[in-house]
Length: 503
Image (cartoon, rainbow, N blue to C red; front, side, top):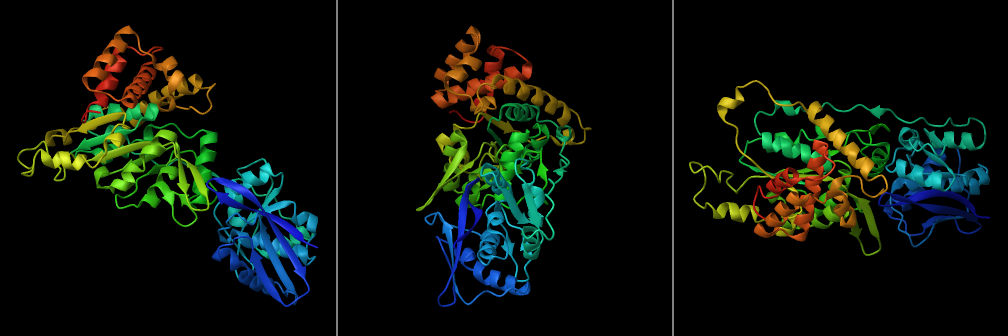
């Protein structure tokens, strides 16, 4: 008779239920695992044999066959160790078969029988809840998985504890959710001296999730400004926190099962590969754009990134998701992020300073910023020149609004957007509005419309650029508390659109 247990295989942030079938039959002694296992899954038999020996359980001299169904779905990862062990113990009648079938299990076995933590416990718990089963996992994963309150989470320290639980000798207590991680201390916007226009752009970008490009000489404060954006953003909503944490769970970034309400801030180096930024590699894992989901992706030295990396950003920016195509599968990850890019005006960095610029002005700047393709540049809603701060201003005391003051305005604007899009669950911020919905919420008054049409003709805005100006104007109106987009809102939006080059 075949014994069964259940586990999951990951496809992006989705966890697909996998049935683990185990048959112990007469024949030459053998232990085989079939069903498209990768190397880590195939090696489970050796880890399992050593773990059972440590418990004093010897495998019978029979033919043991483990099938992972559906057999045409690739199985990747060491988390298949525990479900294979549960199915085998049920086949050997060490534990009741009906109880083995009532859980979704994942975990890696060490040679002495301890359960080693694995990635993906949070999406696995979601899949277990949908299948109306409990989740069995290593103790270190219990606090993370327990955030899914719709299912019971059983966290065991070792395989012996699993056996005692199933046999009724020492039932496992349900795991408790981990702590909500405290917000990391954020840098204050009041510490930035000068740069009032750039600060205003940060506020608009944070309020409507509009992509921002900062261009300025080395040392003018571009990175310093970008580092203060997390302090302006509202905390993650419960839904957003769960979405983001599921991706971080697959990447192994959750700290001791704690879920943070602070929006992620990712700042990859400009030598990062396409797979590191977009996703891919072994197991088609999430990239930086997905790890920044619901948060900020800061790309410093933007033109220094490889051209192929930059151009791969174009489609995810528009769709809010990335599809990693492989020969045998297509993996999807969400990636709704706020892109903040920083760049020098030219290769030498001093295009506007005749005393320090190189002899190739202005060709130096045209060649350097020309590495950013026109279609990608068109996706930046806000483009700001960041001039260097005078030395005499550096000695002045800190002035200007604090991050808390600006964050309060941003939170109010976000609340207006949440109420506005309540009937449109797929739209959360103004940057995501399009089509008839955008016309409904962002159509300016007569003066504003006339100004926008003149700007579109004068600067040859693309259709994408035209609609992005409307979205930014709607966000500026939200910050002002205005019901309708007016001429001043359109004028400011157009000014930010054309600050660095033309569309």
